Amino acid sequence: MKLKKKYGQHFLINDLISADIVSSIKKKTAILEIGPGGGALTKELIKVTKNIKVIEIDRDLNLVLSERFPGLEIINEDFINYELTKTGWKKFSICGNFPYNISTQILFKIVENNNLVHEVVGMFQKEVAERICSGPGSKKYGIPSVVVQAFYDCEILFDVSNDNFKPKPNVLSSVIRLTKNKKKLNCKYDDFLRIVKVSFSKRRKKIKNALKNFTKLNEVKDELILKKRAEELTVNDYVMLTNRLL
Image 1: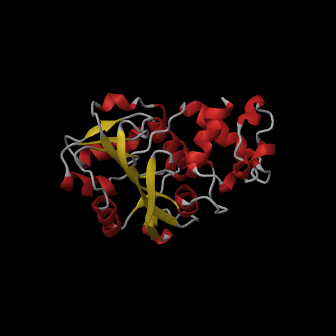
Image 2: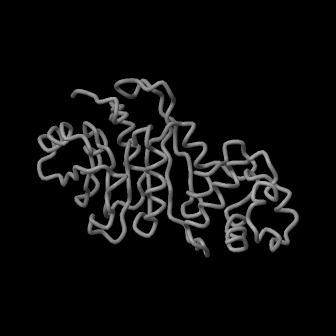
């Protein structure tokens, strides 16, 4: 198979790791695999469920997959632009060895469709995985952490060294699991995202200075929160700020 750099392709070549990833999926009734590549995960997924679809942008790989897995439903589209309601499933899990160059975009797409996606098990660059799963007070805690954790419980399952891929990436990888939580955002998502992004764009400043251009800032009476920096606030703190400022 000819690799295409524009798709950030690094194929998993260790069958044991593929099996471990699939066994980490708790809800296997319906699974959408993103970027199946040569089918390392697909081979394991079809062992645990018949209700599987894969989405792959590379037409050449789709030909390989269709020959290797006759009858497999292959969606030849870009996941970022794909309308997830087209799967026909009310709820489903997502799995994948995600292309590192668009992994954050994939996450935000999933968050925007959290009403459909109840679980995610996937491979990320280790540094990105740590950012997703870090909590308040950590230097790695940032926009992805807050946005994802508003909807999902996050955990790092295990690390994967680069010699398990072809070609070898220049970074270490980690497999994480996101499980839909029972929190209700209680504010508009777009407003929430706006407040989080502005706060972290000035993460070295105290919140009262980072958000000083919002005219309703004087309605926030919690002085303790106003004296904190972006990386110190919880999801609930950001929800409160969203409701006060917008």
